[in-house]
Image 1 (cartoon, rainbow, N blue to C red):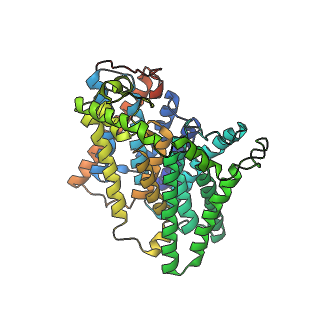
Image 2: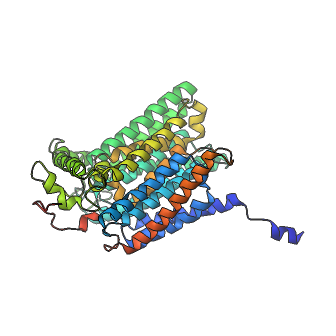
Image 3: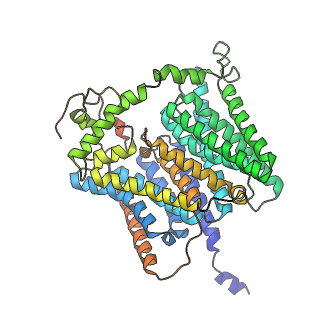
Amino acid sequence: MSGARLRTPVDPFLLAHVAAAIAFIGAVFTVLDGIGSGTRTLVVAIATVAPLFVLARPWRLPWWLLTMAAAMPAAPLIVALAHGELAGVDRIGKYAYFGMLLVSLLGWAITPARRLWLGLGVVALGLVELVPSVSSWVEGGDPSRLLVGLLQWHNQYADFELVPYAVAAGIAVFGARALPLPRPIRAVLQAAAGIAAAVIGASILPTASRYGIALGGAVSLVVLATAILVGIRRRQWWILVRAAALAAGVAAAAIILTSPLLFPQSQGGVGPADPLHNVLARSNAGNDSFNGRTPLWTAALRMGAAHPLVGAGLLQFARYAPCYAVQKLTALEWHPHDDWLYGWAEGGIVGLLPLLALTAALVVLAVRRLRPLPSMEALVGDAARWGGLVAIGAATAALVLEYDLVYPPILAMIAAAGGLAGAGRPPAPGATRTGRAALVAFLALALLVVVGFVAVAIDPLHGGAPWIVERPYPSTCSAP
């Protein structure tokens, strides 16, 4: 009997759950490191996802999805080889981390219970970012300052927190029924998600990030509209009560975040409208963002058009933007404030197509999960998935005006949102042609993860974020 016990293999499901916990710890480390651009952070992030990358068996996913994930790190590799430059090759590692985490979560989160645990992990990551960020902001003693967070920029803090806000709101309003736990424990987790959603949502306001606040408002409207629809059709008024309580909680938390309770030395503190006042005061009637970004977008379009195959090279936008601008650039010039245009400018077709293709792949997965439209029972039985669908929409929209893909913490959040929104039961295993293609695509992604691991180590900038490559940024053309 004892010999039989010794020969009994360890439960693979248990191992997969342990691997998911290790990946979560790696994500926590990445978030706490702030912008997460250093060599050590990326190496740890990639290493901690590796066990889940194997144990979640993502090779069972569709071959086209695995191919798109592999194309992300392959693109900067090809661009770097084409231009013969090592500076900026850590981007291979960043995209490898994103790709392997995305497919690992898609392979692991195949039940509503797992998705709910993943959703709670996403909310926890949001709090890991929020607590030290708000603490640092409060310690500054000036509530009129922007809340920039560990990511060191107010727009990126807002974009990061959009994902846990959407997921926490979904769980808070629609419940934690998917967890095989006693009802009182589920109720406590649901209430905790509601408190987290209120605080996270309110913390976006002091960033004065116009676009982030707008996207946060859109998330709130979608959650509230869905709650009204579900509550009325199911005649479950508690759903409406919870939605109203969430809205009130966000408003109350916003007041507290700028009140004398946190800022006793600021002449009595400031009122709850001050975050919005900061937004309006800094927006110049809402035109600064577009006035500053439009010349950058034009320069990026023209730069990619001049180098359509492999672009101008990694980290070259700042150097060559003045050559392609139709007017003098006055805004930040290291990035065009659009991640798709950045890929086009520095990588041409090679850099742009994987970004577009993976975005399309996530859209396809989301649409599949919504066809047919989920029943009311499905909505309340898989709350984390529907929160993830809202989150991936907000995170994708943020890429239109920002540079989120250079931040590993935000890459982790986007991957988690994609896992929540797109995960489903894998097809039955079989030696089919499609299965062989998926295995080949998975092995290609695994190889690129190894390449990305090495690239992070040999990058001469040691993972330096692209905005420190050149200071000051050139104002005259240096012919490419």
